[in-house]
Image (tube, rainbow, N blue to C red; front, side, top):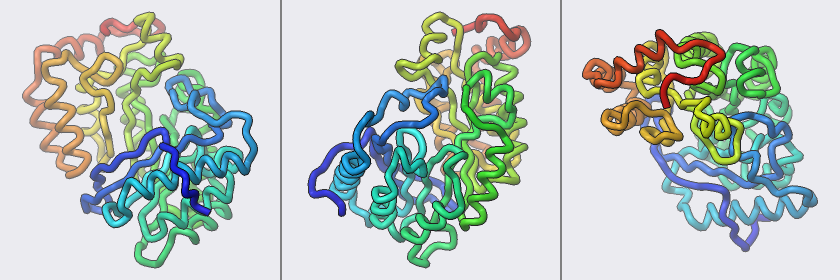
Amino acid sequence: MISEQTEKPLACWKSKELHLGEVIDCLTIIFKSGGCSWNRCRMCGYKNERFARISEDYLTDRLMNQLSFVLNEFDPKSYQMVKIFTSGSFFDSGEVPPKARSEIGRAFRGKTIIAESRTEFVKSDILSEFIEKIDDGSKEHPFYVAMGLETTNDYIRDKCIDKGHTYDDFKKAVAEGRDAGSGIKTYLMMKPPYLTESEALSDMKKSIADVTGYSDIISMNLCTVQNKTEVERLWKQKAYRPPYLWSVLDVLIDAKVHILCDPVGGGKSRGPHNCGVCDPDIVGAIRDYSLTDDRDLLKIYYDKGCGCMDEWRYVLREEKPYCMPLTS
């Protein structure tokens, strides 16, 4: 069923990933799909990337063309893990038809697969069916379902992100995943809009502590300013500032478990940043830490400091809720 035609997915690249104490090669794919059924998260730019108003058969063909491109471009022997993203939820049959989902599973049989989905589409029967496609018996944990919980605070998730589900919904989805034999990866969001730096820092620390018992893998995403989003509108009005890298270091050093973190856009105005001088070293240290779980890498740069650390501490102390950010 895999097409002989090829079509580029939204993005596809290889990288390194720390998994079960070993650094392995990972292929990340972002498929262009039928689109997120919720489509309202304030920071998400992928809601604009979708095949709209096309038949299920045609959507399946487009996904198969993208899969064909991936298989042609990347030697399956060159990676051990596959991370699958779409415009919304991989397990939403309206976004990724079951036929396409099955073929994608078969194509990566024998790999460790992580696929992202909203909580409402995490059902044990659907996950079990997918796991059967990918599991060749070579791995103890062949599959992890990844969910964007973002925060364990329902008020923040609703008012600041407009995520459309609750912490209890997440817990129910975790139970569904466990029933299917799936591992659980949890995404948390550092500093969604409308929070002060101090509020964002406190919320992330609490959220990590809360989800540790539910998660095999925790990944902290740092809010960036993506095109055509509400966050971009606020940022252009100087009503939003991405998190300080000092806050990111503070969270990672304080966490009791290893937290994956890739500071996308680090050091740029649309991404997590400090003053610009210390940013490259800190971004590099965070990426190295994600692969090594060596907190000393983070502590070196935190203890070294920078002149902008005083600014960060001032912001933590003086920035007030319901006001414009003190810095940009």
